[in-house]
Amino acid sequence: MDMKKFKGFYPSLDRALDIVPNHMIHSLVFTRREKSFTAALIMHYRGNEYREKFEELINYDLGADWYKAAYRINVAFMCVDLESINTESLRVYKNQPQNIPKGIEAADDVEDWHENLGYYINTKTNEVLGTKHYIRSSRDRCYKIDYYDKSGNKIKEDQREVIGEYEDWNGPREIYNIAIEAGVSTGFAKKVNKDQGYFIVHQD
Image 1 (cartoon, one colour):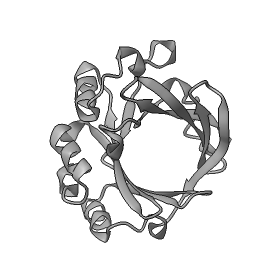
Image 2 (cartoon, one colour):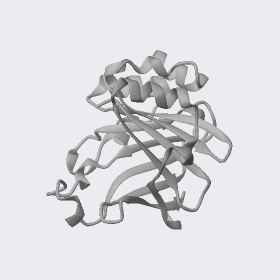
Image 3 (cartoon, one colour):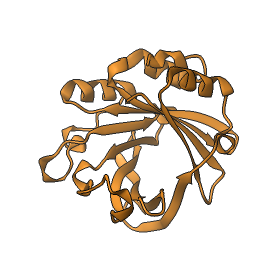
Image 4 (spheres, helix red, strand yellow):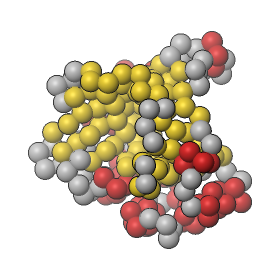
């Protein structure tokens, strides 16, 4: 679908959709944190052209190594919380493709696995302030999220994101209608221990 149909709701998203070509976008994540509504954009990674466009979007040079996963594999997706751009706490995320278990299609039989990694980056000092590790549990149908400080010490663990409903996000009905009318894949999620909900729109 033409993701520009989602323009007009959040200035940060409008800017992102003007920068990132439609074919580079994988998903949009609309987030509610208590009474604050924001958005995140997930991009494909398919080489330097995609890296350059992502760094134009986030206005920050992550360095080539950030896009490398284990076993000389590149990441497949990267994401940014759009409201964090041009702040002193940039929030960016990448997937961990080397961890995808064999037989993932038999989801109920798969052990929990580390799917995504998030970074809080001080853009003034280039210091990583902390990280989030997203462990996918197919059996429990959730993410189990562990938080680490800048020294690598675990400070929170097993903070869960689970399947939600529209009311858990409760954002603009117009956003929901645009996605439904386009016939794309959508989903809702929520944090268990926080007043936080999500509406996810997958382009492909």
